Length: 400
Image 1 (tube, helix red, strand yellow):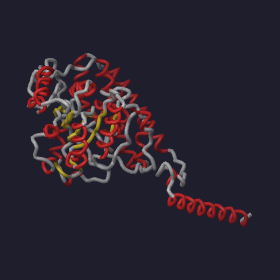
Image 2 (tube, one colour):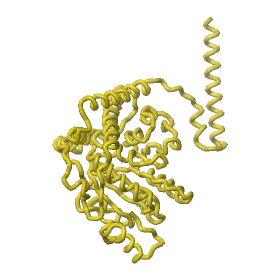
Image 3 (cartoon, helix red, strand yellow):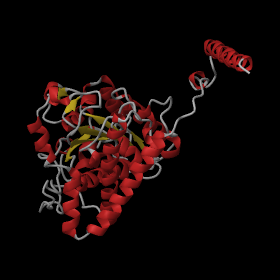
Image 4 (cartoon, rainbow, N blue to C red):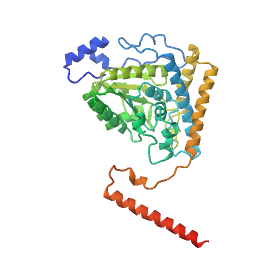
């Protein structure tokens, strides 16, 4: 949370004291331990319903929200595995799997309202789908097509961003525009731990804090920026601690605990919508598979480390928790699995179709008003294609 820059320091302190019962300094610092509600073995932590820190209450989400999130989690895992297979079959050019990180992405999308914006990274396809984008459209960018696959305005989802961190600046711009229009829009800006080493990260957080914008910076700390471990990127106590330098609150959450993620992000969205300003949430998770299909992760991490994180898998954890609660049985699990398989089939069929090629699209969407250079290049290509077609027609006529 950021206190409005129009307030004096004593006013800021009194507002935080009144609302949260703690000092400004204590509020901005992350909790002494990361927030976790469901342990890796699927059991509920005893203190989960009471809150983990004074003044910081994280109610357990309702049963319908938990079940809807679990279904998206199962679908996300199946999509990750299906896409990895499609890459091997040559039907996708590249795919950055989020196997093991799906809980973060499901929670990020589900905590937002219809009019809120999501700005994903290239690894957040599951979040894009969870926000309502058609699965085939969400994966179009990885097929090597010329466009991102979906209309950002229709779904309030930015195009999945390949350059590190540029999407954070886009997110801040949308939040600023919403504030100028008097809207209560909340923007979820997603990034990884590697992005926190980029200059755009600093600029986005600083601008959001100074202008008191409703942005949640959601850092999925999966421990590696491609092959560079977190220890070689930052020596801060946690990435959440970086928030303090910008005058906003930072929080840490178990990124493989879907229940805790929903609770923490639901609360963050509520605070942002109430005008508390930007927040930074760090989710500790792990990339179980290689950076992309072009990466050999055995060169920079060992199997023992991967095996350790397998025991913290968000899918099996949630499965056990819901069964213990009596919310999930074999019939329900079978129905959800059937739905996930239907999505996988949709992806296989949709990404297997040949896409018509329109060469003039190379020039059509570069600028709203084409430059003279683009018009010249477009005309040159049109002439070449026309001559090629004329030559084919002449050959066909000669062969009769």
